[in-house]
Length: 456
Ligand code: UD1
Ligand code: CA
Image 1: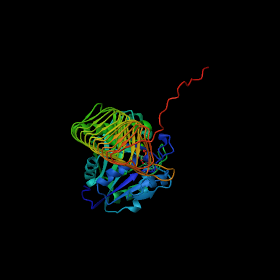
Image 2: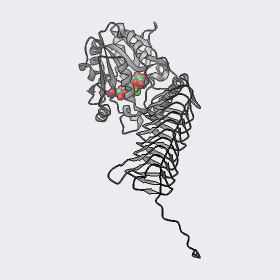
Image 3: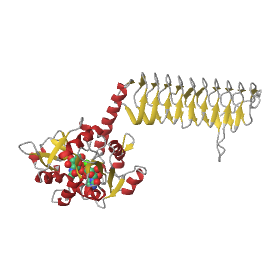
Image 4: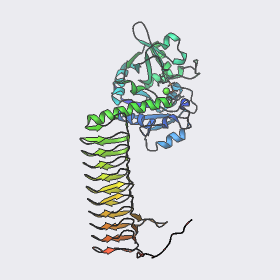
């Protein structure tokens, strides 16, 4: 891919403050689809299998490094942000003269590996720029070509004349050039420009002056090379990204009630004939089996939902496994460690945490079930609570197959209910309930004859 070069090295420029974000957070830590901008760039960089990835950091540097403890990259400090040329200067001592350098920007998150491969191939005999055609209404650097169509320089928008600002071909900021050439050009950059910075883009004029050919390549679609300079840009790219995710989901067999109203912040794998209603958010790694229906306004994170299950509106599912043909919600909350076996039901205003619910069991209304092991065919009445926490420790509740727990029961853990047991409504269960028997703790009902309600 790096053509005549024995190796590829990638420089990611991520030292800028991102003043236009109006934020205390370094720009590259702002998130797109739930992950920092820089994470997207590093993922793409890694797919090219480079010899090294040099990340130039500076502004808010410690926070940037701390956000990527296991990135396996070479962190290069740019002590003060004197421009993109200065940033590359900082990385050069870490690089091999035989390598092709690919410069990526930490604030351009949607680049595709194929686009970069094509760019690197074009750099085989000189330098290569990733450019694209755009409307006039933006501040990208303009690509200036001579009468023969050869690239002669890049003019930054702030330095450009009104005529130059009309040029439609603009600089994505991504370029590929031999390290040996950059070592030669970078020390010759000057800051005689509108921003008083060392512009990396000025190496193109130096290349042209040295008679080095400057090739160009273009991305398959424009959003790939759009940079994030403001929160408006970030929101725009988020939509572009989500739009692409939505298209891919539909191609793979999911029906989205409105492809503009879904957010995938992670990896979502869907089976056939999955139906997803509006305004659902998927985070982390979510797997959804065939014929699953997901109602509107659900949030699903790091979970697996087996085929035929139905998730009704406004349910929140986190770190759970939902078995085949289960029905969850509306307004249910499954917290981490929840496992529902096939055809279990968890209804409205029910919270389940770190619990297993056996096949065909029902917890249909207003319950809290935590640290419990519930067998198959169990019926949990409305308002049942597992009292799993004594203020210091968590304790388990175990309920056998076919048990019936009456409404408004408190199960004070640790406690066990045997198979087929019945627990009467309103019971506060502090001791185990034997299998097959009725257990009840309830003050005997009495009627006070002749009692009068006080009058005003
Ligand atoms: C840059 C390009 C411009 C291009 C645009 C595309 C230059 C001079 N201009 O402009 O031609 O159209 O990107 O998005 O290169 N950075 C550092 N250290 C610095 C300055 C910047 O690491 O001292 C990093 C920033 O964190 C950012 C990237 O370089 O990731 C680009 O910097 P930015 O200031 O956003 O450049 P633009 O004005 O957008
Ligand atoms: Ca930028």
